[in-house]
Length: 119
Image (cartoon, rainbow, N blue to C red; front, side, top):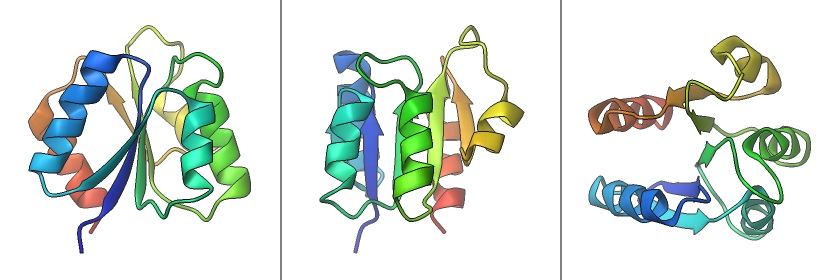
């Protein structure tokens, strides 16, 4: 059975692009446009990994990460961010993130990172 990734980003073009790539790589994918929507999905759907942007409306990636750590079984959470978001990898790991991928990213690196996390 394919592993299930929850993809969270408020940029529709990037969301669609990553959605198509993840499906091509063999994953089941559910998309959310913000952290609030992602929490609703997590409340009703089993997900193996969350891949989330950091800057989003309603509930950003940090607030989402805090809620996942507090309310859901531990699962890998990978944060997507630009180099200008003000967080370091160590800060995000302390909060519970499994990994950090900086935008712009190379698809091959994203694919490798996800494969390693979902072994």
